[in-house]
Length: 189
Image (cartoon, rainbow, N blue to C red):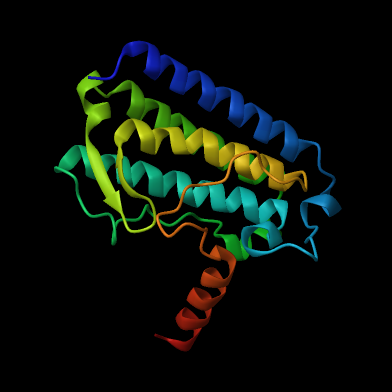
């Protein structure tokens, strides 16, 4: 069973890293929020607005993975995804920083409610992802603040001190995967 102190630490880190992300995003001019680094790869090529939309989408995914772990014993998360957001990455550059931050605030309130409703035993439940392997609910929830840290740095054009630990050893090119997904949707397949 996870100690209450670890849950308190989790929530404190989630608040701190989200505050850093918000400060980074709010420091940008509208032009800076649309800047695309030319020498970057993968997610680093996203604009700050696309980074925020990605965080919104992933918050919903992480929440759905946690709920799946709570619903069954070590589920396979291959087909589990969060509900679509109203401003996906492909439309993010048409939004404002404030619009996306408001959406992130609502999602985070849901996540905190989810956490507050968990028994300490629930944090030990597991779920298995093709990208990350088998993680406990606590580990999935720690992904929230680490993901915020990673993208706050990217929003500011810096290399993050946090790099996700992918099962394959390196991060898949999510930007290219999104381009392919949109292309398939447009082609009707």
